[in-house]
Image (cartoon, rainbow, N blue to C red; front, side, top):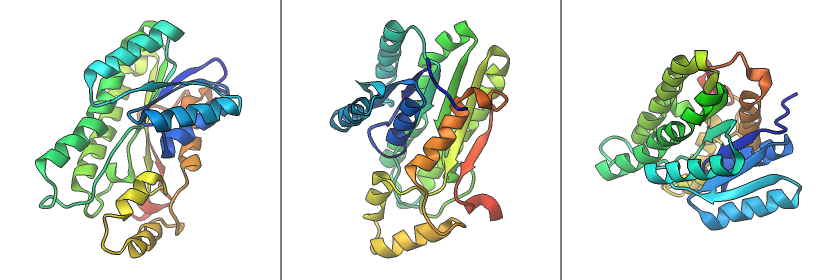
Amino acid sequence: MFDLSEKIALITGAASGIGAAIAETYCRAGAFVYVTDIDEDKGRKVVASLTGAGGKCEFLRLDVSSRQECEKVAAEVLQRSGRLDILVNNAGIGAVGNILATTEVELERQWAVNVKGPFNMSRAFLPSMLARKCGVIINMASIGGVVGVRDRVAYCMTKFAVVGLTKSMALDHAHEGIRVNCICPGRVYTDFVEQRLKEYPDPERAFQEMSATQAVGRMGKPKEIAAAALYLASDEAEFVTGTTLMTDGGWSAGK
């Protein structure tokens, strides 16, 4: 089960955290993986580690906020591999702040990466998927795309938009062989979260509070989110589209 042999996948934001974990999981499942990220050094280190373990993958530098770069990468992938079976729109950024503490510049930057990124990449690859009547798109949303989170106003705005994008695309293309789903993690301990913790006056207290938000009493692990991404990419999920898969440690259970 969950075999991705002969599949071609591309993951954005795959140089660290959840993206890197998905790349590793897909490689182990037999897929050829394009690891993409704006951080070239870290991205190449991920590829070196995966290929050293027998994985089939390649790094491509990509800034998902740039439509031109997304189109260039899509053209390169399609030229090299002939197709893309699985697109994982994982790249994302965030910042702490309520509406009064969030500047327009900060909002626009988060919108450019978190929303325009999946939009740009989906537009770049969807035509080739439609031509084959086959393709899987997985968007990385968040618990913050389903319920409100304190001091995350811009982040929540963008992640609610990702959920809406997912559902709309799923409906639009369900009869054309395309499945579109999103994953909504709770708090997952990654470099991203570690950096966010440093923005708090008391990082240790913030860590404890973030851990307690999940009903299970801890943050998630990147590999646990990667497991959800493996399921959604696999043929076992052929009847699943338009869903928001909650991988939140029970955070949303009482909402």
